[in-house]
Length: 484
Ligand SMILES: C[S@@+](CC[C@H](N)C(=O)[O-])C[C@H]1O[C@@H](n2cnc3c(N)ncnc32)[C@H](O)[C@@H]1O
Image (tube, rainbow, N blue to C red; front, side, top):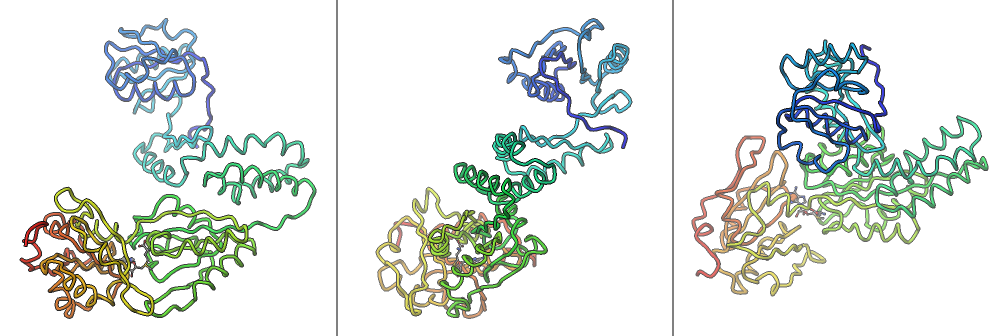
C-alpha cells in the first residue's frame, strides 16, 4: 500500500487552494464541507465558485499566492495547472504543510480520493493516483448500492450507541448486536421511512441482547415490483432488497435476467401463474409469505411490473398486515409504461390523448368484463393488460359501440425484452394480422391515435436488430381524433 487512508479533521483549520477553475472549485467545496477555512488565490474565479460566496469560511484573494500565505495552513491544493503548482509544492513541503497538486503525483503528499458522501458515513476510493477515472467508476457503483438515506440511518443508530455500550458489557456481545441491527428489520424499517417502528424494534432487540435471551429473528416481507422485463429498469431499492433476501417467491413474469440479480444463495420458490391456469392459488401464496416471515426469513416477493397494478399485491400485504408481519412495498415500472416507452408510443400527447386508462380484459370465467363507456371516451389512450386471449371480443366490441374502424391499435409482445414484438393495426384489421404473428405473451394492448407516433418515435432495437413492427396500415396512420 503506497498511501495510508486517513480522514483528516479540518474543522476551522486554514486551507489553501490556488486556481480559479473547476478542479479548484471542487477542492474548495470539499474543504468547506469539512468545516475548513478556505483561502483561494486566483486572479479570477469561474462560475463554479458562486455557490460559496455566502459561506463565511470562504475567502478569495484576487492575486497569486505568496509563501507567507502558507503560514498556519494545514493543507494546500495546487490547481493552477501551470509551473506555479510546483513552486507551491516546494514551499508547502518546506513549511510542513500537506500538499496536493492535481494530477502530478510527485507533488502530492496525499491523494484526494473519490468519495461517496452519506455523511456521517463517507466512503473514500483511491487507485493511488493510477486511474482516477476507475475510482470514479467504482464510486458510481457504490452510489447505487448505498441508499441516499444511509447517512440518516448512521445518525439514527448512533443515538443508541451509549445505551448499547452501557447494556452490553463485552465487545463480542456488542458486535453481535450491531451486526443483527445492520442487516435486520431495524435497518429496513428505518430506510422504508418507519422511524418509530425502527426505534421500538431496536429498543426491544437491545433489551433481549442485554438479558441474554435469544430473540427469535423477526421475519419481514419485501413486495417488490420487478418491472416488465428489462433488468435495467429495476429500481435501486429493488436491487438492494434482492441482494438481501433469504428466500424469493417469484412469478412467471420474472425473467432470467432479473432472477440472476437475486442473492445467489437465496432459496427460490416459483409460484408462477399461467393465464387460465393458476398453479398456486392466491390465498396459498399469501399464507406462504406469512409462514416464511414467521420462520424469521427475509422474504422477497418479486412480481412483474408494479405490485399494485393488476398485481394482487394489495391482497398479499393485507394478509401480512393481519398478522403484524413487517413489510415494505417497492414500486416497479408497470407494463403499460415500459411497453409503450420501448415501442415508441407515448401514452399521452397534447395532439392525441389527455388521459390514459389502464384496464384489464381478463374478465371472470374468461368472459370480457369491461366498462365500454370509459374505454370509448375521445382523446384518450387505453392500455389493456391481459387482453390477448380476448382480443377478438375487444376489437369487435369497440366497433359495435361506434368506434372508428380506423382507430389504431398496438400489441406489444414481451415488451422491453430482447425479443419484443410490436404489431400495429386498427381495431378492424388487428385480428387478421395477429393470425400470422404467433405471439406468445405477455402482451400489452394500446388503443388510441398515439399509436401513430411510433413511426416517428420508435427507438428500441430488439436482439435481431429490428424495431419489429408489422406496419403497413395506412388507415392507422391517417386516422386523427375528430376525423372520420
Ligand atoms: C397479471 S398482470 C401483471 C401486471 C403487472 N403488475 C404490471 O404492473 O405490469 C400481467 C399482464 O401484464 C402485461 N405484461 C406484463 N409484462 C409484460 C411485458 N413484458 N410485455 C407485455 N405485456 C406485459 C400483460 O398484459 C400481462 O398479461
